[in-house]
Image 1: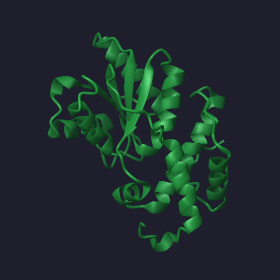
Image 2: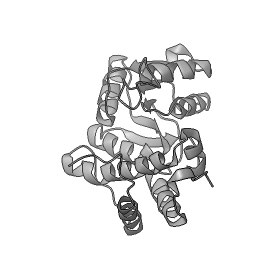
Image 3: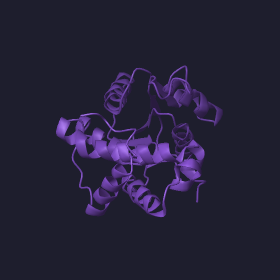
Image 4: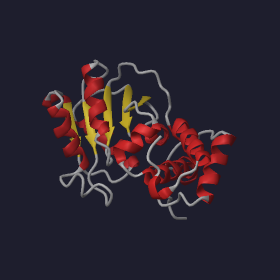
Length: 223
């Protein structure tokens, strides 16, 4: 169990957070795809996972996508995609297997601009391995199904349990806030035309409402 520190997260709140964490992960069996896209974020584990899956022969080329945002500029001053590329090169991915997309500011742009990069490279894409933060799998899947419906989508992320992910980030309250915020987006984005709709089980909705009531709300989109 992570050190709860000053936040004093209760056992019930941990159970709710784990339920949402599990829901966010698609559980797709990994298989070879035409290409991969590493979705930019604060999490360098995306690039680590991309390197591991490249070495496993699951794709011939990866697009690292992402410019900067207020939450990543300090960690990745040259941009998310650039830092991802540097990390993947350090892990042995050859330079000619990496394409860069450095302008995206949100997940929709990650998808559409990466699609443009792959097309400009003359690549035919029938299937796509989307590599994201663990709790972003479901939202990235829904976004890609809306914006690039003709490709088959397989989701992947660093294989971490929630406790281990919290240790890697170092702020348990922030991680639970992010889980709640991404679930809000899974629920609300289809209404805005940003993503396809997905069923949210009743127990996941109940966990979401309870955590909102306890104040895990710093990563919500504003209505």
